[in-house]
Image (tube, rainbow, N blue to C red; front, top):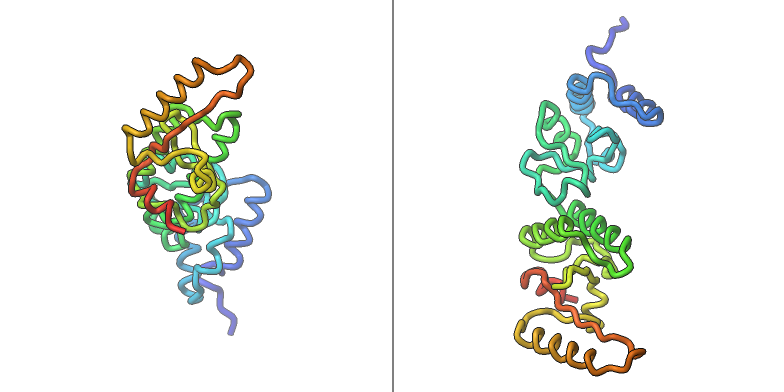
Length: 223
């Protein structure tokens, strides 16, 4: 005797998302659709792990992967522009069940610092805006060091001039870690005196000091 399924199969629901994503359309009736998808996966005893890198969640008018998504009403504000954040609502439980993270993890911080790096590269001098500097300083207060997976060439170390630099630059002594503020000020004063006496066509020296937190810098030195 043939019977009808009480709930749609997960494969059918995922196929609907694939079609909607290709068309640039939102999911149908999201408030019912995502809980139904979670229920179907559980009924079929399927792990959500294999869906982590599939763009099935809909956040801020775009489809993103559960691996990328942060589902939390208390997500750090500095991440909002760099990471897909679902800041609470009726779908929070469903998104978490599908693999979104409840707290910021390495992949989210990596995405944030890559976002900072991209903005720095828009400027010839790798200078951030005041808003971007504020977001970066907030990130420093929330982490103890560079996240796993962040490239050594990414520019995320903020100097006292508002420029950002990479771990590679720090390790090559191309700018200074400001563990000794008095020395940093003396070096900048010496550079200023040298510039006042230099010949018109001599190259100007530049001394920048890292302004990020000591905890972040101590972690950056590892390796």
